[in-house]
Length: 510
Ligand code: TXA
Ligand code: MG
Image (cartoon, rainbow, N blue to C red; front, side, top):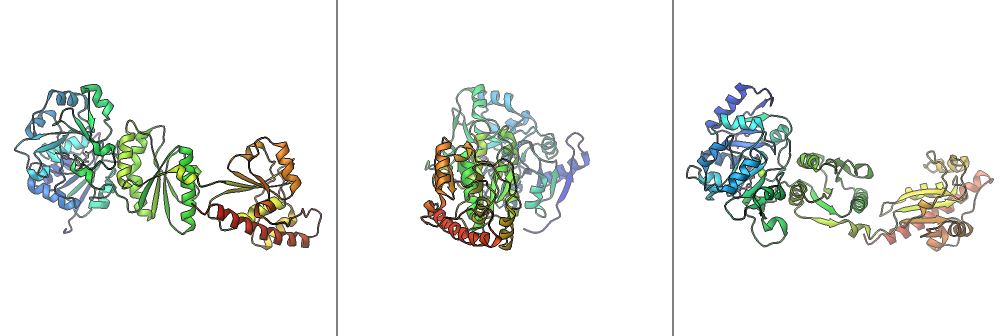
């Protein structure tokens, strides 16, 4: 497509600049393309009654021309000009939900060119709430076709910048009205069938519609992944909203999902891959590997809807190879969120427990008498080993009265090996340390038995030697000269390397 100058104009919703609107109107009436905000996503506007303008729209988006456009109107009185057989149910729905994020399908009037409807004899119509949208529609003659203003196959735009990223130099004008309110495209409801059928979920939910007109059905292709049928909204058959990276949804209880994503991110980061994670305000702090983006709060799914496309676009810039997304609740706008997320993921979903079931231990704790020498050394050596699985590695003492730093000779030895215990503070072993997914390793037999007899829920306590099948024991160096510390360090390192191998064996199936 040949390069053109794209006029980009900011407009204030509460005090609209008439000159900007007049310019947009003039462009639209002359068959040009003007992108503008609506409450759902930005639309790429054109005169809906002009077949050439429709062709331009398809060309700009790179969209197949059998995928019909939605006609946007600003006044209900204009509906009968483009739509026929408007039933009483339709009138009730319009009464309740227009203007708003709801598109209705009717039989089309002759005046609507087949170019706009993708050859169909039906037409999709929507009346947006957004004041800028309404003003642009009126300025442009009242009937404005507007698909989402993104290049076909990219996430829909929720800001003018997103539109410019895709269309600067390719369309006549972009009206910048700031960030959109909802962030997902309108619900599409087919009024040519009885009962009415939802073809695309959005902010107006099935429950909301049923409250007004009784039974409403849902296109089977939205419910069943391999229904074998073609979606009734032609656009829904395409893998829309596709990010550049492979997106994978991780399903399950939030706790399991976090553990599974952590593990995957850990492994893939080790392999040198750049991994993205879609998290929420509640969960983002749990991830330590990968590029983590907060998509909103689970307390308010509207915030998630609003940020979804922006986050997907940002990951395109970050150039990650894989994106792992937490999954979200169904019901309300959650259905629309999961519908878009699933489409972006090409329906790649994994169950969190399939990953977490393979992880026997998530924590390794070394227990010594006072947690200031062998324990912290072992932990730090293990942290420096190459492990297939991510563990929280730490150390504890049987009797710790103060949070003391590590023994100075131990620190001197560690430093001579490019490691340090500078951050270490001795910590008393407690009941909560002995849970199901923690491997507890002591240095001496006596310590092991003390734990077994003094604590209640003891699950996995071994001596280090027992666990790696090696009889050598690293004794306490307390009161010994530095040289002895050095010798025992070497033995400890040898044993910890064996431990790393053993743990990697254990985690091999992941
Ligand atoms: O929220 C929205 O609806 C946004 C804003 C800009 O208004 N627009 C939007 O348009 O999402 P678009 O073109 O990206 O998606 C229109 C969807 C497509 O899936 C298309 O197949 C479907 O509406 N559609 C249009 N006319 C139809 C018809 N006559 N029968 C069935 N589906 C239709
Ligand atoms: Mg679209």
